[in-house]
Image (cartoon, rainbow, N blue to C red; front, side, top):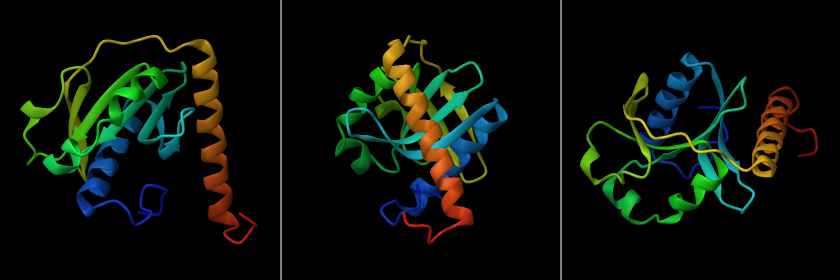
Length: 151
């Protein structure tokens, strides 16, 4: 996958889940970027943005061990209107926290198993996230046409 998400640190399972999640959100009218740096220095696996300015963060968990090793996901809620976990079908859904929505995905697509109530992001945070999203998307497009352009 020619994308920032496939920087060599992600498992094949995580890459497949990311692809399915991105297809799901594209079908719902969202654009997505992966591995987006947040205002607190963390990086979100997938961030989706639609024309109304709705921000969604999807945290991908490819295994039980991956989930248990990560507690930073709670910090993502301050950066989005909705927070979801996305997992492969073989992972047990019942271990995923109820504070976030839940998506099951593979490389072909995804389905939302559990919705989460919409929160309202602080206006300054929304603006910062939208700028980060736009700049990341533009820089990644530039790199496609000019890979040696001084990045």
